[in-house]
Length: 79
Image (cartoon, rainbow, N blue to C red; front, top):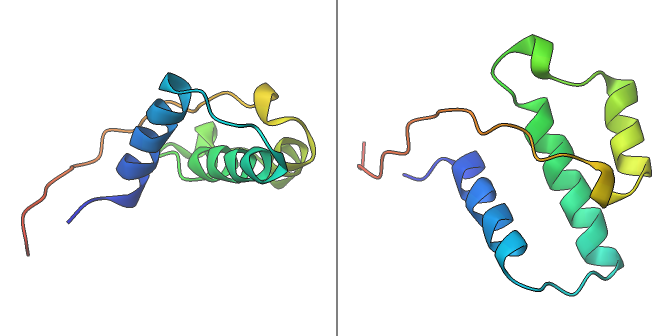
């Protein structure tokens, strides 16, 4: 089973490695993905407040840093 946040980080790496057409849908999607990844950080002190999340979603996708990747098990074993 693949842990979804690990898959998302892989997709972000691919977006950065290829030229992606930056239309409005891409910009909105990237903001939502990055804000979501910030919200699931392991340490509560690393998670944004709701006001910070709103600022992320209202601002430019280019202004949102990619959060550090937490170390989750990426087991592909079937349980």
